[in-house]
Length: 210
Image 1 (cartoon, rainbow, N blue to C red):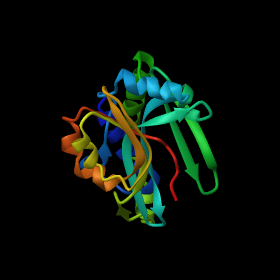
Image 2: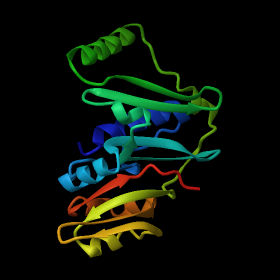
Image 3: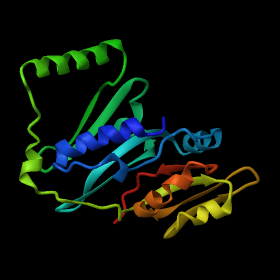
Image 4: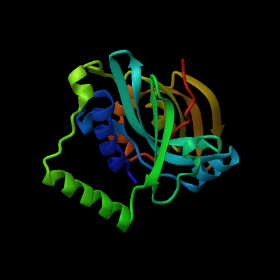
């Protein structure tokens, strides 16, 4: 719920996909434990579901960024119908284009199968090769990355901490306010401890920025 499990899985995937082993504490994560009825209603009115989505990708040839954030998912996206105990993974490669994998991530049979597979692999000394790590094509990690977020908040002083570069939508009411705009991932990481006590909720809109 708080995004810890998603972050640890993301760090494992990052090692396989890019050969870069990241300490989990270096990766920003934010869960869905502070979601409110207001946020869910807002998403439904816009035709979205809110899913907790880890992301890792290149910012340039030798540099990657990563984070875990709730995200608005529209009905035309692969992850829209991934519900309950199912997990979904989207990969995009130079020659394989975009691919989507979906399967159970919890439950007795799925978990038992995974544990049995690990025990079996250990019995004959199997080890992951981590070929990408040996290639060394990705060597840098950055949090200097712009993304568009929806921020629902109560206190205007909390909103100022996000240092919005641009604002595309703003809503104010007696109960809650929200702002949609562009922030830097580095800023989110810097205020990660303060986020825990805020009456607020953050969602990645998913909009690609230039």
